[in-house]
Picture 1 (cartoon, helix red, strand yellow):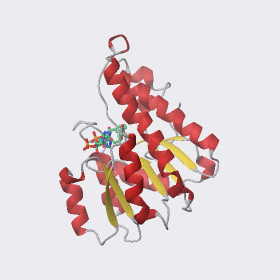
Picture 2: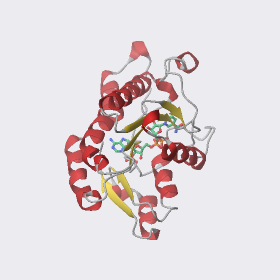
Picture 3: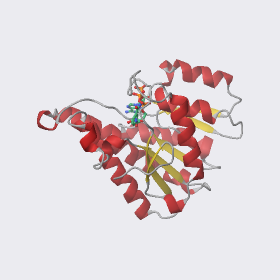
Amino acid sequence: MPSSASRGIGLELVRQLLESPANLVVAACRSPETATTLGELNTTSKGNLHTVKLDVSDSDSVRAAVKEMEPILGETGLDYLINNAAIAEGGNAFALNPDVLMRTFRTNVVGPALVSQAFLPFLEKSEKKTILNISSSGGSLAIAPQVGTRNTSYAISKAALNMLTYKQKVERPDITSITMCPGWTKTDMGGQDAMLEPKESVAGILKVITAVTTADSGKFLRYNGEEVPW
Ligand SMILES: NC(=O)c1ccc[n+]([C@@H]2O[C@H](COP(=O)([O-])OP(=O)(O)OC[C@H]3O[C@@H](n4cnc5c(N)ncnc54)[C@H](OP(=O)(O)O)[C@@H]3O)[C@@H](O)[C@H]2O)c1
């Protein structure tokens, strides 16, 4: 279940997951009525795609999504929760707009924390019990010198998401929680100069995530399975 499936990497996740008819896919997005490509996938799917309204920054919306998913996942549970939704706004350390920082933190950190918490009962019923937090190498201290001064709010939020992942692993050893950089990818966020097409990034993400076990929990991985230095 990707937490944001209207466009970019989330939409491509849905597309590739639907290639296997055995998958039951729940695509969450904050405005299903305007997510036209997702709507087209819904029309062509073989009944194995459900679209759920979810704004990860709004706790009422998270609670409502759980209710909406109850009849879909109540029996089977949820194998993979993919916390993909994020925003990236600019800002340097000594010129941070506090509203931007708070908004970024709310979407990129509080969102995945809340969604993981609220969907835990679905994960507990499943076999795989896997949370994938889509992070960024921009949240790595080791890589920060190459990134320089830009995107400070975003980098702070992804570093925090990495720590959330580690805390999830420590608290629940029965759950596999992974934090992952999808690579620099051609989306609205990554821009058209990016290195990867969404389909390459997502093919890698799915290969890695379907192979991980609890022994990998807490790892910070790249879309190609390499470890990212913290
Ligand atoms: N692209 C890259 O190069 C790159 C690199 C490193 C990490 N990442 C990470 O990869 C993930 C996906 O990025 P992307 O490139 O696909 O970005 P994108 O094209 O900008 O798409 C962002 C997605 O997040 C959704 N979203 C934002 N706020 C939301 C909220 N409050 N509730 C629900 N959905 C929300 C958007 O929904 P709406 O359509 O409703 O706005 C959209 O579907 C993010 O976590 C990002 O940080 C991307």
